[in-house]
Image (tube, rainbow, N blue to C red):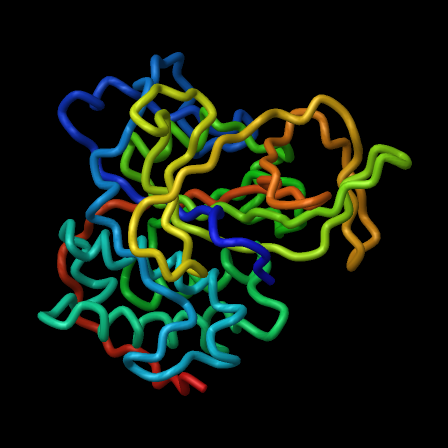
Length: 297
């Protein structure tokens, strides 16, 4: 469900020599995480112009189910995967001359019933984690790990136990070259009870952070939005919520809003970062294996 063009993240980047001293800042509850004191760059946009920006409602290579209205999740993942393939992750996808067409086929496959199984309601964090995990296992990346940070429910296999998204974790992931997919919720604000009621959501590709309009900005994220016709980087300026409650009309769940990040989208409507998924993956030698037969539709 989309209200306005801008915002929602999936992240992909690759290390540069000036960033090699930056280490991960991940969940203390995960034995697989590396936690070190670090100094992050003030901004990072090394690959902002190189990460794909596929339009989920496009029809050049055929339309996605329901005209792509709910396909922001698979599209965001595909942006990251195509970028990884160009960096030498050969098993993910074969990037040929017509990379847009290849990406379109990848999006259909990711959204299929074998993987994310995207429906009219979109793609939940659990479905994203399950689908990406299976997709990578099918391609020989058995050591790849997915970590979820946020307040929406996922299984213990992916849950880090950190429910309030931390921008420093997102920034460290980008700088260290990890793909990250960010889940944003659309919320209607009510002064009565100081409540934010979730009425929809979106996924996007994060391409950088730290500046806007030529000026450094600590809480600015640079994104490619799957639901925007505009081809290019978009900038969102976040502010931290001081008080309130986040509620979900579908699950009837609620959580303290303090510490979450928001931006205003319209009269009474806010985008709020519900959570994000980090993919930790390393290059592997080419493997010869037979992929399962998949029915895209």
